[in-house]
Length: 164
Image (cartoon, rainbow, N blue to C red; front, side, top):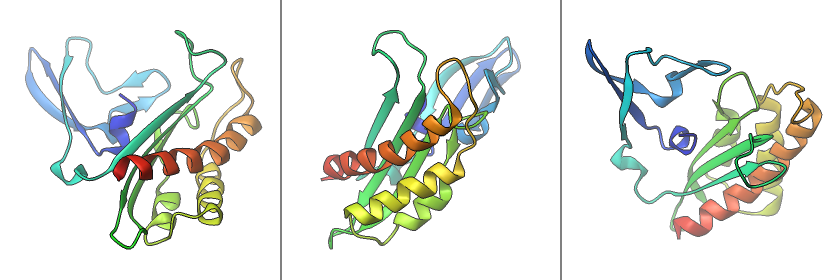
């Protein structure tokens, strides 16, 4: 569900009152809360055609890779231009705020920039500054911020490779 946030997807819910379409960015309303009514089911994801040509990547950072709740999640969708600069970028973070969020300032920073380490490091710092994580049993606020700064550049690189 989380990766579709960077793909600007819409969710189609259906229940006794009929169907309704919700942008995924508006689906989450708080910790463990969504706009889905108790008598509705999610029946469809609609991903815009404009997302063709994007490469994407997701990293679930957790203590182990089994059925474990994440300490942090980072998703990136990226489109490269012919001159090897980033033409479009989408970054989403989970467990970095009360609801999954997009790192819009980091996205805007990346657009038109080359895929080099200094640029990616700065994008990671910007994304980290946009987050508002909290301390929990799974991880401390400072650790989540530090890991956002680490994993955003890694996922941007992987997304660029996948974009071709």
